[in-house]
Image 1 (cartoon, rainbow, N blue to C red):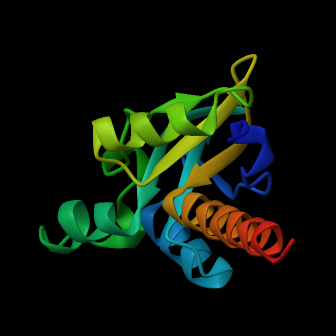
Image 2: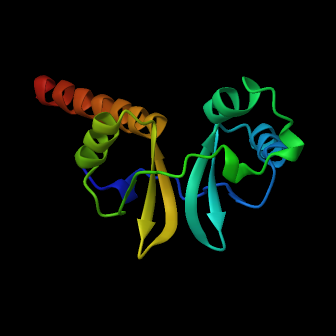
Length: 139
C-alpha cells in the first residue's frame, strides 16, 4: 500500500508555544485549517486543534488573548516515521482514536498525515484498482 512519505503533507503550519490562543485562532482562520503543530524552537511539543479551543478555552469563558497556547494544547501527540507503512499509520490512528499523526524523521518534523490524506489516498487507490479491473475484463 505504500509508506507515509507517499501521502503525507509536507507543508505543516506551526506556531510557537509562547504565542497566545488568539494568535493560534487567527492563524487557523487565516490558513483555513483545523489544527497547528506547537513548537519549542524547531521541535514539536504538542498540537492545538479547534476542539481544544472549544473544550478548554470557550467553555471556561477564558480570554484568548490572555491564555498561552501551552495552557490548552494537547501535550501528547502520536507520530510515525516517513517510512512507516500506511496500514500501520491507519492502525495507530484507529487504536488511539485520533485524526492526525505527525511525521518525524530524526526527531524533526517533516510532515503530517490526516484522516483526509488517508481518505484521498484510498479513493485514488480504489479508482485505480477499479480501472485496472475494468481494463482486464475488457481484454
